[in-house]
View 1 (spheres, chains in turn red, purple):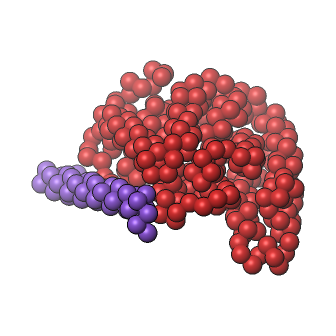
View 2 (cartoon, chains in turn blue, purple):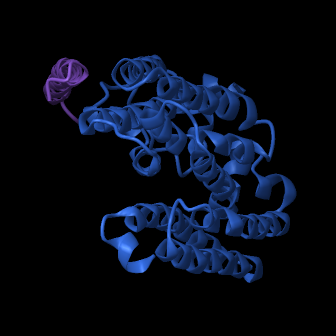
View 3 (cartoon, chains in turn yellow, cyan):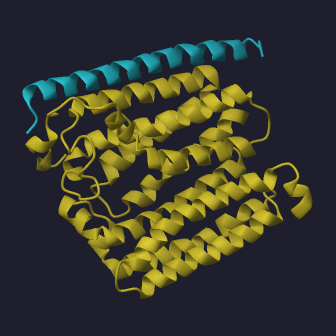
Length: 306
Length: 44
């Protein structure tokens, strides 16, 4: 950690944290996408899982992701304090002591893995543990402050949930699960770089070597466009390998075109506007792709469209 | 600025909310393990 960690603003809590502060530690907005992609992995997996156990599996994925977020906030409290986007978080705002956040995150991490193992299966539990460990140790501790490839490699942490969901049903990892992993993995760089383009000053102040800070906006925009092109075959592949049907294929085709178009608009935009729009659209893109994987499999839809 | 009494009240109400949340989590865990055991035993 940097010298910023000695700042009194991030050392001890001035007041008792409220329940909402603990909720904020779990990064609920990130958690919602993680839960959804985890559910889709679980839904697409062949086989049967009791609905109660399926709900427990999804809950464990949510809690595990939240735990990783809490530990991330504990470790990053120094840089969070200097970034405008994160200054209001419970630790940099002084509403919670660092040890409380760390303890909270560790307890939830262990609990989510144990419940997954005891209630669902140990393959899914092991993958969940790997997800949490990857996010905390590989992304947060190792990569984030060291390399502009931080979110490229670290993106794997966010890509694991559908694999965990799949393993909850089957007890192993299949090709479609790996495809969903690859889809999120290659989606993460353009998604995060769109954000870091218009938050470049924040990251520079905090000393985080995001690509726009290190290589400049031009290079970042070029790489964003490259990744949106790489996403085409991955987005279309579920329909090509029989995981999804014609409806999904049509939606994936349109979404891929729109995502690439968004990256082209970012390339030509000298300001922040296109990057902000692309960041918002990237979330919608992933959500819709995964939603249509489910819709395409829904009873009645496959027969009508496919 | 808040008075000392108001601050103490605020602290007490936060403590109470935390205790309630903790109780809810513990009860939830008990219910979770109970249901999980039932499902594993094939009760429903």
